Image (cartoon, rainbow, N blue to C red; front, side):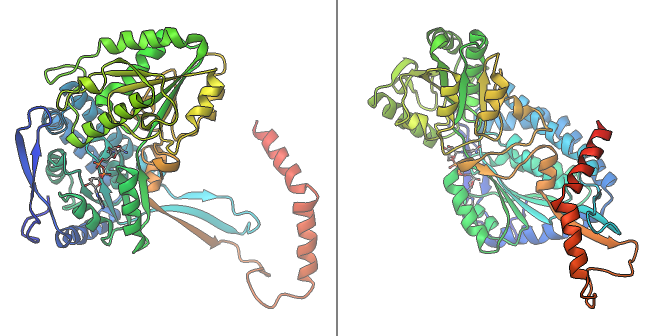
Length: 508
Ligand code: TXE
């Protein structure tokens, strides 16, 4: 943690349990001076860390992973208390976060190794691509997955040889504090992972600080502010913004399975996931059956703070958004089959199933981030895909069906798609994660995640000096004719294509 002696904080944040309203902790709102001091320390840490052999870095990251695993109950308890999600979900969150830390640690050496590539026309050259650390990565995180989501950037940034300064959400800073504590115990380089607590002002200071990349997860509106701030220094940014994920149910889907999975995808984490299923397009043939099954499955989902399936909403503001979207939908003609705005009690929202939803409704266009299954009837799966693609967002998606399901999956405009399942892509660390459109850009997780936090460097080394080089002055005038001939031979007459085809056929 950043020491309070850096500069006086701009007040304190009282962290509240969403379930009970009780104050469970307090953290300072750190000002720009403290943020800049943390970044300066991170630069020193980055210099030491990046100079260490990859195997030593892996050793450190594995130690970090083990220390977090050893304190799984502390992490799960902290997440449960400050975010409100059930202990089971909080424990799963720890496991998923660790799967990324493990993946980044063990893949880094292979993925970031210097690679020799073809040198093309300059055959006497050795061409290489290196993946160098960037330096200091700023991670600005949200509250819905206080450990898993930031870890999706932190693990890959550290794995790629960078230091990290992490600004957690003001709603969930205690998990971040615990993470910083464990990092200090287990990583051999001091200040490699620092946490700066605070609100939007602290985030703004970090976005404007002398960092080498910003990985932001949050709303599209705040993402725009962060990009504007980053533009001042031309700091590269990675944006993981909201989503309005669609599930398409084809006429030949296993209806019961699709309904159960859709209900889970829409309601898990009380719907507060960037990859929650927020819109469902069910084909006419199975629509009635599907809706009945959704109601059946959703009816079994329990709500409460004592081991139930869904906990309270993490913030009051989010309850207001859900209520507003439900009111808007009902005013525009949607029918509530279960739950609904009238049944909201404080932070607790009952699983809500809506039908008769149309594209004009907020519930079908804006991120709702609540436990709502909104189902639209479509002609068939192709129609469903077309409607799914009519969104400014494009983070995740899901499709259920048999015959053409893979073909249809490829047609959905989103960064990730689960086929006959939901959310599965988040649990596979080797799959890159990120969106299109208003859902952002850049990729965390997987090999792409490691490269995202690296600077690609190309090196061309002359290995065999030639008597005559195109990269020099003083070539005879006849060179023009020779080049012209070469162009015709290589690129005009199909010689390159024939050679390529021959090589490909040999490789087959
Ligand atoms: O997010 P914000 P909020 C969506 C969801 C939700 C909405 C708002 O729809 O209703 O976002 O949630 C920091 N410069 N998601 O208000 O404002 C802030 O302190 C730099 C989607 O919580 O985007 C926090 O650490 N940073 C999402 C982080 O940005 C600033 C997850 C996110 O806050 C800042 C959560 C500024 N000017 C909500 N202002 C997802 N993609 O998973 C705030 N912050």
